[in-house]
Image 1 (cartoon, rainbow over the protein chains, first blue to last red):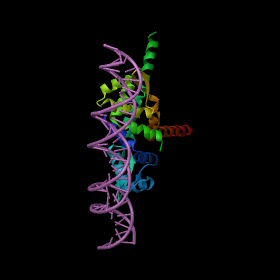
Image 2: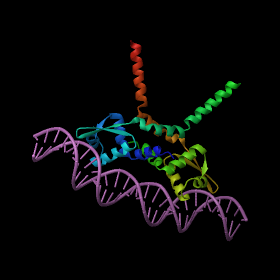
Image 3: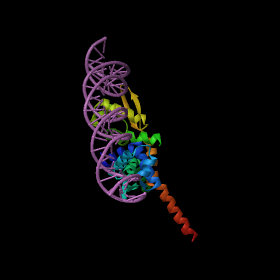
Image 4: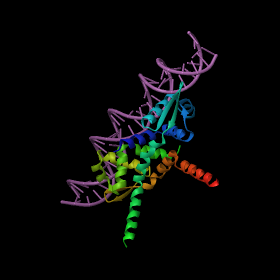
Length: 107
Length: 107
DNA sequence: TTAATCCATATCCGGCTGGTTATAGATTTC
DNA sequence: GAAATCTATAACCAGCCGGATATGGATTAA
């Protein structure tokens, strides 16, 4: 029961929050104002979502004057990619292939 | 805002439910009783989780007498893998590499 | 300095959700 | 047929969560 995976899944489960993250991934660094203008919710709601994303390590913030710039931390998705690979049996298939190869090499 | 991704993330966000799915992925087909004995929750809770997983296409069921066997549908994870690849900019990076390569070949 | 802007926090609220117990249907066993 | 077993559904409840409004702190503009 990896706590990291749990945090990632829970954080990305909400569509509004995931939308914010997607936008940061695609468009790059954005201010809270820009994100609020785009998302269909209030500014406090956006701030709260950004806080959750930051706590999950999915975004980082940079303060500049009275505005805060947020940007996506793509590396934080690594555990998610690993989990998906494990579940889809990616490596299992690879090991089977390796096993076959070794068998053929013996003969 | 893909509805499929939303369903997958929401479904896998709960640790108990995700645990059941992981077990089905690793151990293969399981009856409700076996899953209940393993998970730390009641049998109705397990049944409800299996219903949610099935509605997301993540598991399939097979009836045999008075017991129901569930098995993981790994293919249903494909949209998740795709989404992660998109967000991590996997292809973006590959295209950048290709661009660099072409540039060097020109010179 | 005063006003305006940007963001974060506090507080509250309604709805969703994951859990339980109770129960019923279906099937096997005695 | 009666009892026992397996699973699904119903009904209910507590807690969490995402949303809104209100507000304060910090910074820039007038």
